[in-house]
Length: 450
Image 1 (cartoon, rainbow, N blue to C red):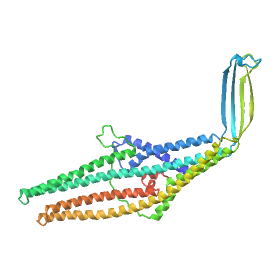
Image 2 (cartoon, rainbow, N blue to C red):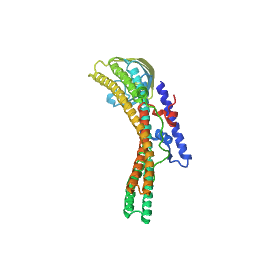
Image 3 (tube, helix red, strand yellow):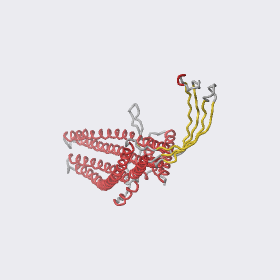
Image 4 (spheres, rainbow, N blue to C red):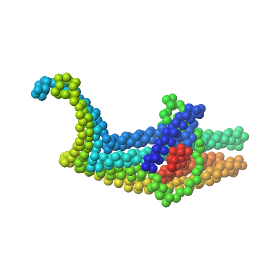
């Protein structure tokens, strides 16, 4: 029951987010600007995986309503008009037509436990579908963060390569000035020009990676690319940032087993299969149904075709399928196998989640160490460039030394933004692995109200 209330809250908050998003898009003149918060909002309302998961919940709810129809009274109204050949008339009756209209209400009294078990099975299947929706939302939130961080990484790499071009252009201009002063040979200018030309290649690739990252983010968000294709689908705002987190494998494993929606869904599916097996075995039992009705039909003894007689009827119907060609046995074997598969899937997923948490924890620790290491390297590389230029100006270093230190600085800066991106992705994956990713960020916090 708590799970059902939890998901009704989730769906309500998601729909409210969609309304707010539509209003925001109409009122904000810069409606194509997306920060992380808006990316998460858009994914919740427009991502196709979430929409399909939500429809599967609705499908299971319809199946539950259908199964409930077996345990509540059923009302049927029937009517018939029939014309007969004279040769088929009964002796003494010259009527060549007949009609009847009636209504009957029936109620299942006993079905061997089939109906009750079926309703319970469908209710558990609906709960499992809601948990699958939660798992899908967690996965999409992770995909959204990864795509968003990918855009920020590509944009940062563009800036790194542009800074490198600036350094190379300064070096080229310095070489030209020294050549005019007669301090260096034309070879220094040529080498600076070659270095500048080589620096254009990674810049071009970084810009292309940025365009691809933008389109990948648009795909995750469910935003269609403009037909012109000249402008990016979304305008991403924000910068990569460092968020402190203290990893603890024991606590993370415990949280994962308690929080992961996949485990909860498989548990509900297993329980649903247990009820389905019970319902299938109920086919071996007899069924008893009570009925009552009232009918109007043509009076065979009257010459007027529209003369009628009417009356009520009531009773009980007993049915017992003593032998059905082993159909029930076959269905029972299928249900038992489905139950065993559900149990195995639950155990397999628990093992997979344990491995996922361990790997995510290890990757996070690695990313954190790399980030702190790259920060120090950038500081050292910047100082190295400054010293190399100073030494070159007094003739204590060569131009090659300057170019090499500039290349090392560019590599260090690129490693730093890559490490910061990897840290953010690793943290998001770790939180997803332990089932708490949806608790972080303004969108998920409002959607997952306890």
